[in-house]
Length: 480
Image 1: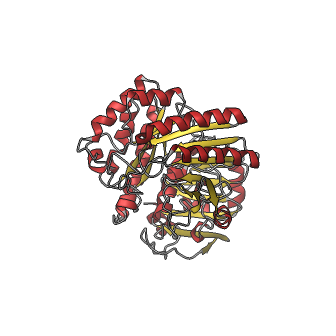
Image 2 (image 1 turned 90 degrees about the vertical axis):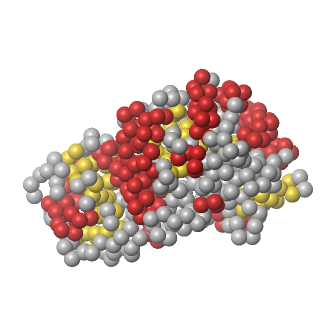
Image 3 (image 1 turned 30 degrees about the vertical axis):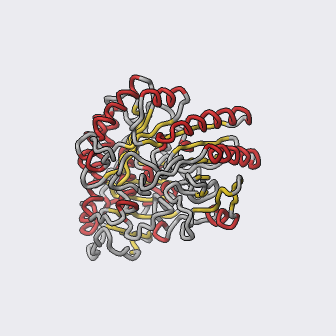
């Protein structure tokens, strides 16, 4: 393992901690600062956004600046490299030869363009207003890991609230001179169960965007239990559709049981075939648990047979909602990284874009998503609570993301709470000096991640991605 190599070759006295162990102190080496964070999760910081990252037994050199990012691979051993008296000069001369990272890896282009502002669960970008409508708390599934316990109640958003939400968003764009706006259907339950309101909101939003000269995008996150008529509507209105699907094996039925008692897998396979026949471009979002982690590479290969599937996003199980009592050991996160990297390679072979949200190197941002930062989301619950996070929609005093309420025909916004969310600093203490901090921006603002496992996963996947991107920028070994 990389950590073993470093112990023997660089720091023979170092005793590496386990994944959840404490951070090791800085060690002076060749007048540089070196830090081991976790087992198999190490890097050297040379300052000014320049890092050496051990990967696959070889050193990666990664440079991050406000303008661009560059990565190249060295064939030198770590010991040889770190003992060079001209280390920084040697590295920077190599970086001058390296091409900046492309907007997305060329090896696996997306089948269709995608506007990140269109989905509440993707990454934040500035200068857009994000409106999310949670049309209902009802759901026809009872997923074992549901973050918000969907289906525990059956509340539906009235049309008057949906209409007023769109009007408020349009007015905000006009007042703030914003040119882009997104409408997403997501939140507390399955949006397609409130189909009439969804269609009416889609048409009304599109008309308002045309009337006010705004560039609008619409997205839907669905469990996939949609029929031909609904798919045809989504395709005709260019609704960017994300289908939640975790596997193509029987594990899916265990993770996402239907309330009717039927098996979900055959229903989703029918939905995929309908999307293909009706020309609906869609993406797939999978939650990974110990039950389906080994399915990931084969699942990507399976989805590649559906030509309208443009992207697959995987994320590990989060201990919240129905999964709040689940305890995952360190082995699961190692398995997730390995399976994701194998799935990524399978995607490259089959021209399917496989992503993990916090490790997309093409993104530079100060906020991971719109739950905090300059352009916080306007998420409206079925009962009128306004929140910046679609996972936290309860109207309770301890919900730090709630900053308004629809009352007496108007939105009452709390300026103090809204300002607090806009000014929130997401980067944590452990982000200091991390080479991924401007990519993940501290990761999910709602999750504390006290044991550092999300950071461990993000960096593990990012290193693999850097390795792929660096293969065209291999720098030779020069004598000192």
